[in-house]
Image 1 (cartoon, rainbow, N blue to C red):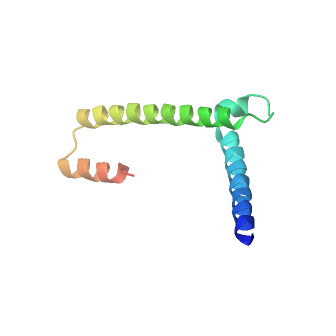
Image 2 (image 1 turned 30 degrees about the vertical axis):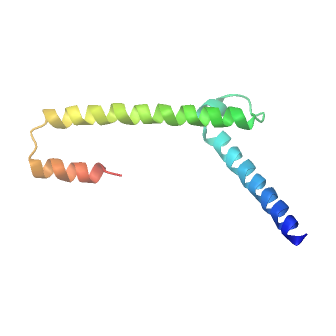
Image 3 (image 1 turned 60 degrees about the horizontal axis):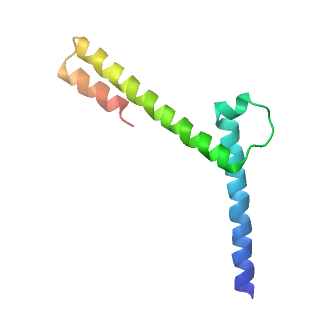
Length: 90
């Protein structure tokens, strides 16, 4: 019986953690922040999160391409280029 309780308590804690994370996501997403402050569905928040992440990935790719073109057009040595690439690596 106590195992059942801990399982329930664990589920309750997990649900609270999920609710907290979803609330944080809602605050972070610009699309949801611009709308009224009413509570959005979890599904909508997760969809918006995925969409926002995809858009950020596209922006990173575009900026990486621009940076590559810029570096190619600059007259820098291989050592400077490697140092800059190392600096920009996550």
